[in-house]
Image (cartoon, rainbow, N blue to C red; front, side, top):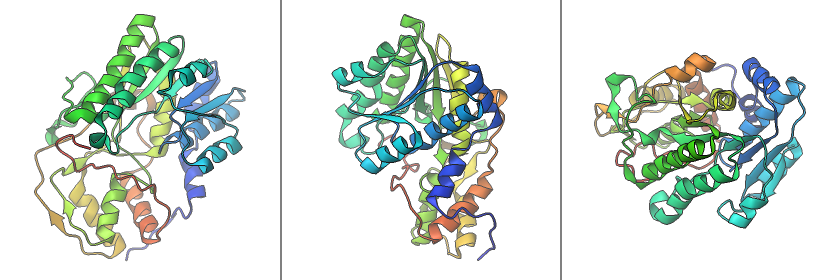
Amino acid sequence: MQTRTNIIQSSKELTDILSSPSSELVEVMRSIEGDFIFLGIAGKMGPTMAEMAMRASKLADVKRTFYGVSRFSNPVEQNDLEELGIKTIKGDLLDESFLESLPKVKNVIYLAGMKFGAEDNLSLTWAMNSYLPALIAKKYKDSRIVALSTGTVYPLVKVSSGGALEDDKSGAMGEYAQSCLGRERMFEYGSLKYNTSVTIIRLNYSVEMRYGVIVDIALKVKENKPIDLSMGYFNAIWQADANNMILQSIKHCQSPANILNITGEEIISVKDVAEKLGRLMNKKVEFSGQEEPTALLNNSLKAFNLFGKPKMKIDKVIELTADWILNNRELHGKPTKFEVRDGKY
């Protein structure tokens, strides 16, 4: 087994790193006015993103209120956010009376959505991913809105293309991706109708040691399961880098809505990642299927020109993930299903 350095050994340490703001974000928080509300805060990214925003505001010496809205099926998550100083509000965003009761604030970070089990409950998938954004666009028409979307709204593109650009035509495959495109269209419609400043973030994929494509591959390597190569390439970005860029994008909201791809610099080979993990974990790696010439890929040059390139290198994420998985540390238990090529999640 290879020697590794600077290993992250606990979720507490990991959370601190994932919520550490950049100096650029601190300046953004100093330059804007208003409170923040995070809608759908209890997902994979919401807690560290909200904590990062709070830390950046504190460093900027700006006092503001932070709200976090979710169904909070896990009361521990709600309590953790409250202890950070975030005012949590428990409820179902699809309940219109609950939605109307939410405070109106200047800065909205929209994180709500449904992916896991989308094919098993298509009506709820469409309600969460398309109907709810229409309600949010109306409720917060006087705010700045940063809305998270997904790179799945693009078609599969040639690996040699460098990834899809924001101006490329959509090619959403399957009802999940179509419903996410519906989300974008509702925020675009609201932006035009109400002159609301909006940024839509097409994220593809955020990773850390508790979830993400690299975790998915590492688990298979550890369990001696074959790695499917049919979706042979992917994009990834360290969650702290993604959080920093997403929060900074509040400065780039506009009408008509601005669209930003956010992902890492590289087009990453699934086979290469699996082989690196195999060496780090002292495991023999097996593969199935063949690499196709196309994959679900984004190009983030526009975002890099605004925010700079990600600070964390993917090779380091691979190293950290190998150690995390070998030591049986905490996982979110939410596979990305990155192997899917037909849009059925």
